Amino acid sequence: MVDSVAIVSGGMDSVTLLHYLVKREKRHPAVITFVYGQKHDKEVEFARAQVEAVGCEAHLVLDLSLLRPLFASSALVSEQIAVPDIVDVMGDPQPPTYVPNRNMIFLALAVAFAETHGVSEVFYGAQRHDIYGYWDTTPQFLERLNQVYALNRKTPVQIKAPFVQYSKADIVRLGLELGVDYAQTWSCYEGQEAACGHCPTCAERLQAFAEVGIPDPLPYQ
Amino acid sequence: MVDSVAIVSGGMDSVTLLHYLVKREKRHPAVITFVYGQKHDKEVEFARAQVEAVGCEAHLVLDLSLLRPLFASSALVSEQIAVPDIVDVMGDPQPPTYVPNRNMIFLALAVAFAETHGVSEVFYGAQRHDIYGYWDTTPQFLERLNQVYALNRKTPVQIKAPFVQYSKADIVRLGLELGVDYAQTWSCYEGQEAACGHCPTCAERLQAFAEVGIPDPLPYQ
Image (cartoon, rainbow over all chains, first blue to last red; front, side, top):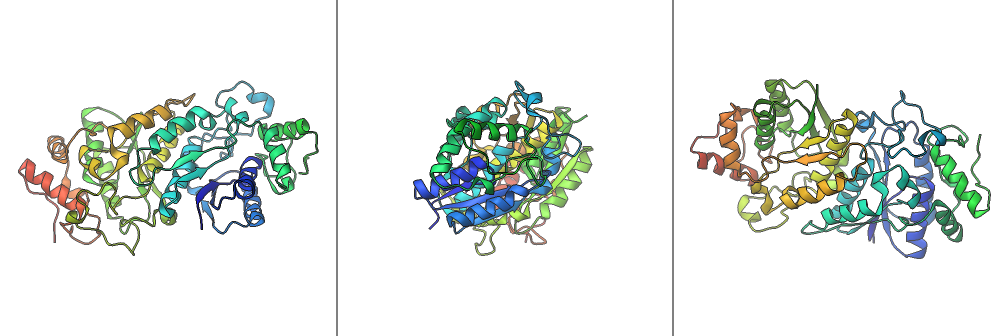
């Protein structure tokens, strides 16, 4: 019986969240995964594999590629904008990898899914590290958004981000305890055979594994 | 040059809003219209006609019918749930015509559209009358939601609902001043040739015209 909704992209944060919810918290989330016109959707196959690995019964993959016109200003979607190197986005409060209002949209859809299922919790994988560049991953964002959803008269859904105070290294440590296979996750903004190693999310991932002191099992170029 | 975004469904509230923005406020909104798996999308053609009537240059119609699984608990979407009569929903704080989190989703998408265009205002047609059954049309909803969007670091979009304190009769009065052709709007939740006259939105519309003291130009069964 589904008791919550979890947004899982197939990246390391949300995959760890999924394992945490199922194995540690004994929850039964319905999982929702979004395709939104990114340059690649390689991570979606990893999301499917991970949902199967933890034995979730419900997985909805929504292909929202038709939203591409709304996201045309993002390097993750537009072919006209190159994915930047980590060094180019340091100190930028809203780097070109920002996808306009993506988290609000995904959370709003996940909330509708929760309401329709009559459950009142939505989990997503926001973590401390993303705060440098993304306004929609912060504790303050979460707090204010929950004040909006508290107004719902029948199913006041709560958005929960258990990792919002975790570093990416904290997430890796937890995931290793929980037996997460990080070879079955994808972070790189490029969709090549092997991860690029220098886009912002690759750099952060590599740093997290280095901090923990174990090698990242993903192949890099 | 587009200076804002307006959500226009083709119903009387949002169509009046469009005329108000263009004719009275001299604004240049990009218009966005959503199809979301409703039992009919008759109103979309009226939205197109009205956008043309006021001479807007940009109109994006997004077909989100694939979201139907998220909205399965609504009488506006599910074939298993009949559209209720107005008498059946009086006093219900969340009637079966409620579409789960629809306004949050539409507003979130409109905000993304605004961000991508570099404009910081999104208009929608919430009005006082809907407050009885819909939590996502109230002044408090608007206020709290704007507190979330204020956190955006580059384009803090403001959601504006100029009619939030208007009754439906106030809207009709304003629309008649502005020359709105209400024969080219659609409110009825059923999608028949003529409006049903007894679903909640028909009843409210008919009452508004009665208050103003002119006949509704739409054909009714």
